[in-house]
Image 1 (cartoon, rainbow, N blue to C red):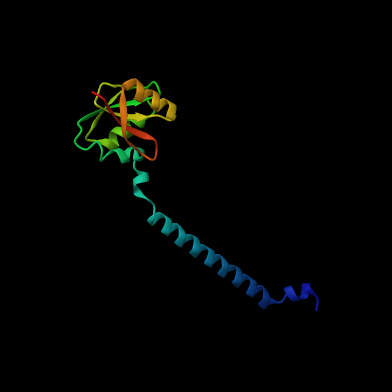
Image 2: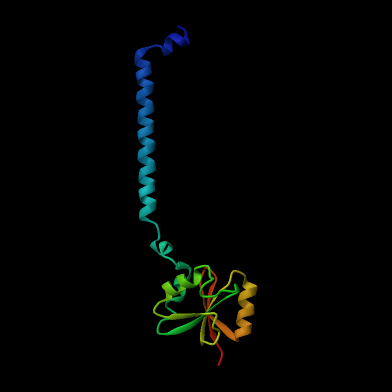
Length: 141
């Protein structure tokens, strides 16, 4: 029996079509259940704006105002949104952009050298550091 005659058998075609449909159904079921599982296990804190500042919230409890410093030259009109996200996450503490005169300071630096420079310049000590490198510092009196 030739292979071409074997593939022309009507039941064999039906078998391969059914097998193909079953494999597609299994793959679809597996993918959909894994996707639902990932969405359920998604950490909601990473969906909130300013989540990288969330680790400082407990340390700022009861503190009405804090300064916000960055190595970038930011103004209220020209900033990348991190200041607003920090203000959102750390409310009710009011953050004062580019004001190093507060007792407590939030340092948002991308480079450790810049953070060390700002700590020395403001005569402050770090109190808390988030896993994202955001620093809460206290100025020495």
